[in-house]
Image (cartoon, rainbow, N blue to C red; front, top):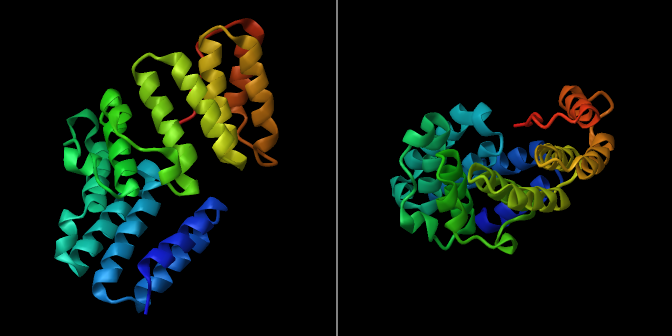
Length: 238
């Protein structure tokens, strides 16, 4: 008999270590053994993991949600399902998407609230995203740096650069490897826009060794050139 909560903990542990293949394998193995209601919940978790890949996984997110509904129609009312639907809609339609209902934003499930925040940020509703209550300690490790990154993006949309810089720094603190490098690069880009070339250079110097042996250096090189020339229109790595 499959215990869904234990399975999700195992998935989160794999994701915290950056082992996405293991996370998918754990979910797929559990879904083969679980009963329909449990499989439906696992399908929602599968949708959450696919959502980490962003716009490149729209089809996979949609398929996971359809499977969940097929296995258990009652899942349509689940806050996590509704939050993932809202995120999928926002990724597809941007500001024209239907925002998640207040009940979803206030859901007891922090994973649902996280995806509701993503939906609001993607739909260009940054203040509503920031108004959503989501303590970082409520989230599994693999989502903590992402939470700070989404919050930084929301502050950036609002033109609150100082807050965004600080949140990207915190995101980098919670991330590892390439993810940490990307957060440092985002921070450096904003610092450069603010004319803080010394701080931007320090962030870039932290980011460089975190890239793989043959990294895509274009953004890093352009940022470095901007530092050297005093240009303030730094690129953003999405």
